[in-house]
Length: 271
Image (cartoon, rainbow, N blue to C red; front, side, top):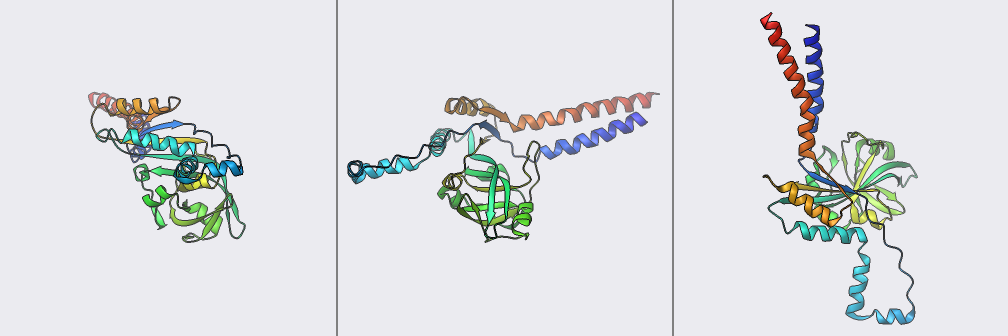
């Protein structure tokens, strides 16, 4: 009986942990290091400035304004658009740990700053406690807006609803538009998190450490092979993770324990 009770306890514990993983969206995630930011452009001489006048000069200046990372993501977007029946949507997130966030009252906290790009809604929608999430238009334009977690809101602004108030990231001002409930994931070291458009994050001069491309696959076989091939050809140094497979693996220990528990109950019944 004691062994059966112990197996039942462990089965319930593993079931709780395993089913928590089932709440994550079924994404393929490609993790890699972001490209180095572009070096500052050298000051133009008078002759160079005259040569850049006109339509050709404006086109060159517009191209120079696009960072290497954004140019890379736009290239990926064009490739993902060619397989609409395989990849339903995709998004990118750039993580910069230990980023200083400062308020107008000179209160400062270090947080994990995450820059979002693309269809960020596929990453899941955490409970919004006040305000709202970032709009797709804000992500596309690079609007300096931020969504922060509740603990950061309280410790940084001394209130649970700082919607409409401002914070600075390296002298660039962001407006808080929402507060979400935050639960730290395994391996996450920072106690706080803040989410902003990726373009606004780059405009603030923040250099990210980890780039994650998340793809929502269409149902059916072959999606992983096609998506993996595109991502590997796009940037071969990345590592692909399949969240659906990880969710299945998380349930394996529960299945083993349930089989052992069923075998023990059968043995006790035959006795």
